[in-house]
Length: 201
Image 1 (spheres, rainbow, N blue to C red):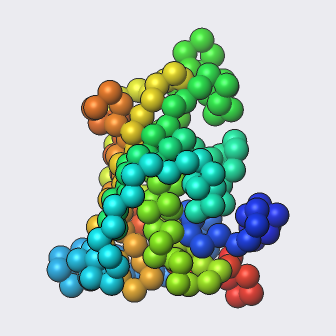
Image 2 (cartoon, rainbow, N blue to C red):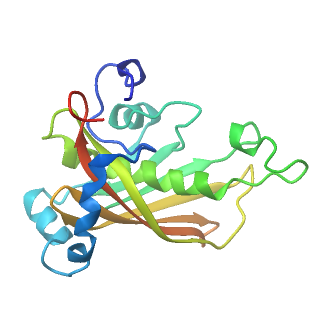
């Protein structure tokens, strides 16, 4: 259960969190999700205006997802439209996850880079959750994770996430962490939508 005090002024309308529970039954839909053209983003786009947003402050990010320091890993939203989002993050030497990882040779852990993608995906999906009160997209899987470049404190990265498919309440996305214009991390991931409160998370 995520305590309400963690959400700020109210329950989140859309955010990934590191929870895997019985709510992840949407994974059974994975094979159907891979069938192009039937349940894809084009159908999502038909339900929403093709809007593009540039620039989003940290305050607006906090309004969209429940993550807070030290686990809020997005500094800025550069651009967002119906099916993709681009974010920025600069890692500092004071981040808790580089303390001891590793002494005299600090490296940003790969799992933290993956979490950056999950949080960017949460912001992207927030608008899809707006019509579902007390709903929360919960991460259910990560596939094809690849680490191509080392990311260190002081590095600024761009986080690119694209929504590929929707099957019922399951969403399938691809994330990339780019360092100096080159791929550092890549992964496919999925989430399902669950209700927060009674009978939910």
